[in-house]
Image (cartoon, rainbow, N blue to C red; front, side, top):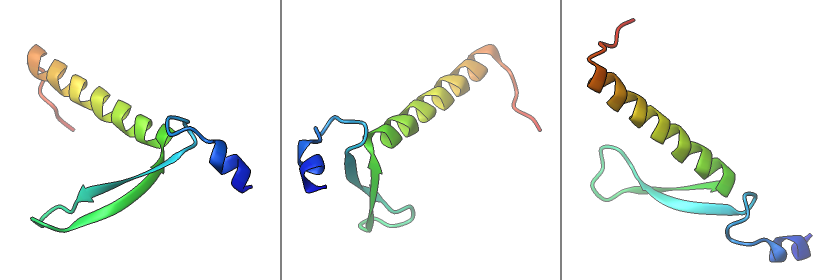
Length: 66
């Protein structure tokens, strides 16, 4: 088992990375979040799609409504 983990590359989609993220409402407090590289990539891709969609809606003048 430890042999498998030792062979994992840092860029491997299954490798786990931890990031320290700022806690909303605090100037100094941070929390540690650990996810696989594939999960971090999925989060970034989703955020990029949402940002591009927001820019496109604003450019076309479309008003958001429920």
